[in-house]
Length: 172
Image (cartoon, rainbow, N blue to C red; front, side):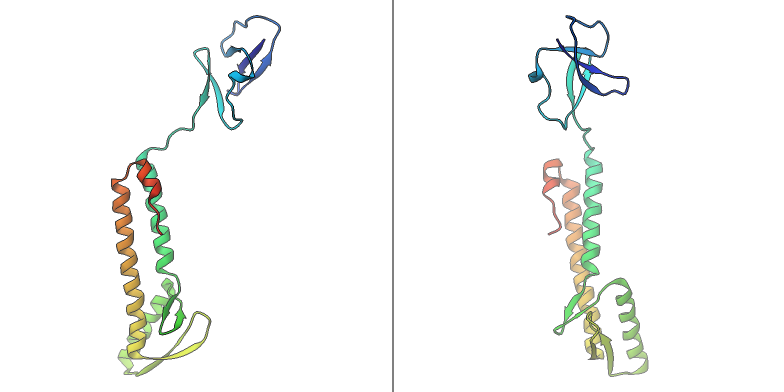
């Protein structure tokens, strides 16, 4: 006879015994190996004298939504701080670079400069007019604004989504 047995650690395993029954809670008689769950990854348990397959606890929808929003925020932040192409050059646009750019614009305006040297992402010096350096800042701000709007749309969709719809929401 085969028995599924639950040990003191709560694990279920097989026991082969020569008796027709075992009168102890936590044992379930099975007719053959076919009575067992068909995959090794499933967790077995014994409840009310029956062998059952435990399922992974379902994560509440609100928690899934919070996780999805965090994912969207992370992707938006990464996109906002990615390098940006402007006037056929690629410039850094991380938070530090944006702060330096703001300072450079203020310096140009305060000192009456007509040009300013700026560095590309690959460390090439480029002389930009004041209008061009302001234009670089405007380009970064416009991209940021578009990404914030996209993020808001995704988060609004998350708020309205059921579980199936939530899984389909992607940043791309």
